[in-house]
Image (cartoon, rainbow over all chains, first blue to last red; front, side, top):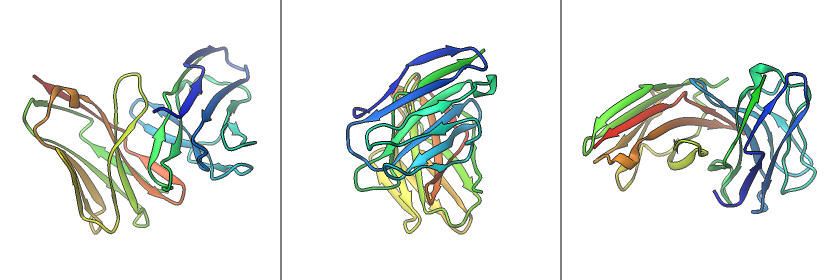
Length: 113
Length: 110
C-alpha cells in the first residue's frame, strides 16, 4: 500500500552477520509493527511501537531489536543472524483513526545461509 | 496467549461457487477479527473485519460471521471469481497483540 516502504526487497545474509531491515511510512501514524511470515505459521508479531520513543515485544521477539527515534521510521535489527530467521518480514501500520486495522508494507524476503 | 486455528489449509472451488473459511480462537478477550487476502509477492491486504459486538458483516460478495460463545468466525465468499484466488488469513486482536491463522490457499477454477 502506498505510504509504507520497506528495504531491501530481498537479501541473502551469512549467518552471524548483522542486518537492519528498514521500514518508513509517510502517513504520520503513531503505531508501527513488525511481523515475520513463515509457511504454515501465518504472520507472527515480532515487535511493535505505539508511538515514537516507545517499543514493545510481540510473540516472537528473541533475536530481534527495534528502535523508534521518530514517527516515520521503524527499523528492525538482527544483531547476529541465524538460519531460523529466514523469513519474509512485513512492516505494518494501522489505518488513521484505528488501532486495529493494520496495513502492510510490501515485505522483505530474508535468507540466512 | 491467543491461539488462532484456521481451516481448511487449501480450498479449491469452481468459479461461481461459494467458499467458506473457518477460524477458531482461544482468548475470549479478543475483540477484533480481521480477514486478509495475500496475493503472490505482496503484503496482506485487509478485506473485511468484524468487532466483537457484531455478529455478521457483509461487503458485496464477502461476509464474515462471528460466534463469540463458540469463539469461532468465518469468511464467506459468494459467486467466486478467478481473481479471488489467493491466500486468506484470519486474525484475532487484543491489546496490541494480533494473532494470525496459518492461512488458506483458495483456488478458483474457471
